[in-house]
Structures are given as structure tokens and as C-alpha cells.
Image: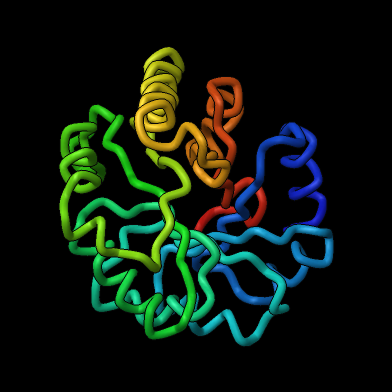
Amino acid sequence: MNVQANLKKVLADIPAHVRLVAVSKTKPVEMIQAAYEAGQRDFGENKAQDLAAKYPQLPQDIRWHFIGHLQTNKVKYIAPFVALIHAADSLKILKEINKQAVKNHRIIDFLLEFHIAREESKFGLTMEAAEKIMYSEEYGQLKNIRLCGVMGMATYTDDTEQIRSEFRQLKGIFQELKEKYFSGAPHFKEISMGMSGDYPIAIEEGATLVRVGSKIFGARS
């Protein structure tokens, strides 16, 4: 498995305004180090304890992205250092992220996850649910978290038109939130969508962050 050659191939497909998050879940630190040595700085993990274990073993200028479904009791493991949490989908989790951010004297950036797929098994909010959170008094009191954009996962299908329309839907959600609440906020800029199988479509539809694992590190171990 030549991680550096794979990384180079993937990066060749990605325009300069899009950031690659190399999804290193289940992979050993040696593979992450190889990607780091080839210039990669953004890495994604989906298990808080795995991420907390890898963090001290690797260079400290890595930007760690938490991309999985985050449980409230696991936030404490990643709160001291995580750069961006991609998949916040409830007021409950946001309150816990804020609580742990306060303990660590930092502001934690996050994205709201929206449900754009046809599969019921996928997590995520509707626009109505997201606005309910954002209008709530409790959300207004959370001063140690910062909303930087949106995240979504397309349906697992070979139908590229369906995937494209789901990504387009997420871009629409982003634009609506930007116009309504964040028109003057430069930090509200991220659209996290697209994985190994569909990131070229995601880029065409406006992704600013793509999450690619198997194309760099090989199939999940």
C-alpha cells in the first residue's frame, strides 16, 4: 500500500479551494505519518477513543477532524485538541461539546449534519430541526462552540444523478443558512460532503471539504 502515491493521485483531482480530509480510521499511525510526510495535514477519525490514542503519537500540527456520529460521553476524549467536529446533529451534543470546550479553555468549531440521503439509517437534521436548535435560548448561551458550516452524506447508490441532487440539496441548505444568519461571518464557509466513491461529484456541487479514506489508505482493516 503506497499511501504517498495514493495521496498524490487523490490530490491531483482536488482543486486548491477544496480541503482533503484523509480518513485514517482503523489505520495505524505509521500510515498517517507517511501521509503527513507527503504534506497532508487534515485527518479524519470516527471513534473518539481511537483518535485520542493516536493524537499524542503524531505531529502536533495535524488538524484532526471528527467525522463520525459523536456520543455525548465521548466528547471529553477529543475536546482538548479536535480542529473540527463534522457531524453535530442535536442540541444535546452541542451542549456537551460546549461544556468540554469551556473545560479546555477553547472554542470548538463544528458543522451541523443534515439528512440528505434516502436511507433512513443515516443521521442528520432537517432544516426545520436545525432552525429550532439555532433559535433556542439554550443554544444562544453556548459561547464556546462556533458553527462553521454543514455536513451531509449522500445515499450509497450507483445512481450518480441521485447523489448529485443530494449534494445540491446540501449546498442549498448552506446558502439558505448563510443568507439568513451568517451573511457577514467569514467563518461560516464549510460544506463537508463527498467520500472515496463520490468526491468528484461533491466537488462539482460545491464541497469545501471532502472525506477520503480507502482511496488513500486502502480498504478498511
